[in-house]
Image (cartoon, rainbow, N blue to C red; front, side, top):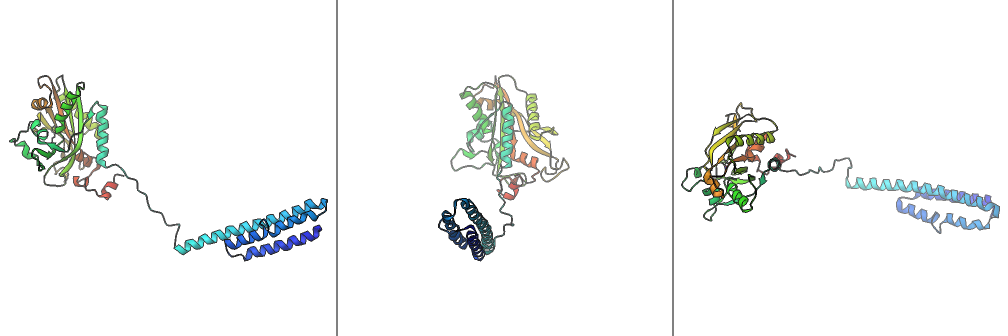
Length: 352
Ligand code: PHE
């Protein structure tokens, strides 16, 4: 064979190949074309086997011509395949009515409940001041919830705690976290921990009372107790409470101290804060008084120190009860405490 004949044959083959590519409908047909012309036993490969019949000095040229033809056909084929692939995808998307420009579903991240956040923050704050974090049971013995806190059965103070009693005599849902005062003191002594004893006890408490914007049957408190061998005074108590409030609100709050009666503290106080909702003008949350009860506190009653196992002659201390639920409402401007445990995701999402 001579070079001119080869050229003519290659041209014919290339034209035939291009026509076949143009006529092929879809990817499968293009595969057939590829096999027929470019495959191992395809027509173009067949041309290579003819190279042997060329004179030595023409062989390189003949090989080059054949390879170039094969390359062009190959490029044409790749191009056609890509087009066919796109067309197939478009057709499939159209078929299913799938619109890739519609935004996908929004993935919402979970977050901590505002009560959990405040509890953890306070725990960190107290731990930094040397307090231990204690826990007590939610179903509590009458002894710890009342008797050991200087509230005997016939004491009128019991009536202010609308208690959920269980069917087991002497067992109730705790009405406050104060039972952990006595449990905590006993635990401190049993473990021979060094003095002073400083502890907090956050948790759920329960009261069987009429529910309104500032009362829930289930709410959260955080008890605090400090007992020392040295005399503990109201000045210590006040200083600690001020430090605490600064930590919570990040600024100095206007507060007032009123005498308050709790059988387990003597003297007892109510620490009020200027209502953060209305800045004191009066709103439903503060019952139009401009003040909200924030923190009952006082010096631990000697009878309670005795119940805890310390000697009231040698030990003294202070205690306080933080209303965590109320704190969350104050901080986030929630005007109804019932939202907190409603489980309403619309409410919870506002804290994400
Ligand atoms: N346990 C009291 C209550 O829930 C609050 C309190 C705690 C008062 C500690 C004084 C000291 O009403």
